[in-house]
Structure formats: C-alpha cells, structure tokens
Amino acid sequence: MTNKTKPVTIALTAIYLFIVAWIILFKLSTLSEIAHLDHIRKINLIPFHYDEEQSYHLTEVLKNVMIFIPLGIYFKMLKITGKKAILCGMTFSLCLEVLQFILAVGVTDITDIITNTIGTAIGIGIYVLLFRIFKKSEKLDKALRVLASICTILFICLIALLLIAN
Image (tube, rainbow, N blue to C red; front, side):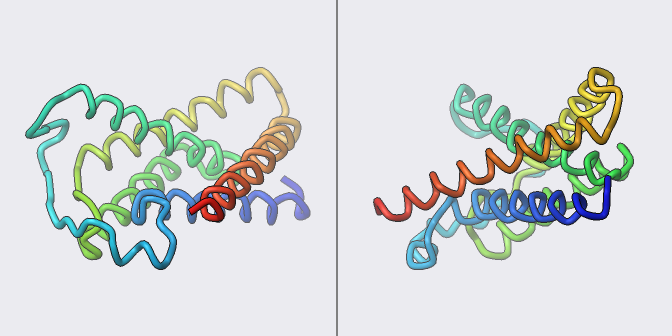
C-alpha cells in the first residue's frame, strides 16, 4: 500500500466503523429519535439461546455475520495479520455490545460477538481468496478501494434520502 492510498483505506474503514456503530447502537436513528429508542438493558451469555421463536434469529445471525465481513477485508487491506484482525473484530463487537448495555439500547448478546467475529474471519478469508486470484495485493487493494468507495457513497446517499424522507 502506498503512502497516498493508506489514508483512503483508513478513511473508508473509519466511515464503515461509524456506520456499523450507528446501525447497531442507534438503529439508524437521527439525534432527535435517539431519545425515543426502546430502553432495553438485558444480557444473554448463552450462545445461540433464544427465549422466543427461532426463524427470526437465523436471519439476525446471518445479518450479524454479513455486516462484519467488510471489517475483515478492511483489516487485510491495512495489512493487519489474520489473528490480530480477528481479535480486533471481536474487540470492536464486544465494545458495541457493552455500549448497548450501558446506553440501554439493545440486548447485549454473546451470540452477536460470536457471529460478528465469524463475519470478520470470513472477510479475511474472502481477501485471501481474492489475493490468490489477483496475485498482487496492490491490484486487489485498488479494486477493493474503488468498490468500497462506491458502496460507501451509495450507502451515504441512501441514508441521506432516508433522513430527508423522515
């Protein structure tokens, strides 16, 4: 990664982390809506344990895995080793879960930490597979930066439209 491209990757990663935190903690709420969020302070320390119907939870598990896949890819683009990237993904997830409890904005759930960490690991695996195809990390990182930039811009535009519509 060149000195010119590293800040772009760091900025894209920071935007991604902010968006994930906003989604998980505040459910895409505006500042005025945050005060009206359901105040839930509950902890589940039993992995994949649910008190009610199961089908909804499979969807939730898959969403948790998918939302953290880009994190593993970003970490590899920043040349963070696989083990350290997984540990960072798990730590970020743990921080979000603790903040959910502190702010009383959701259920703090060990399943979320597990599935988010799995998502980070899958992202790392995707990067490794793509690296085998591209053969050069510079080409792969450039392609991923372009794709991430496009997705980030589209997502920000979508959020702006949703906020304007509300």
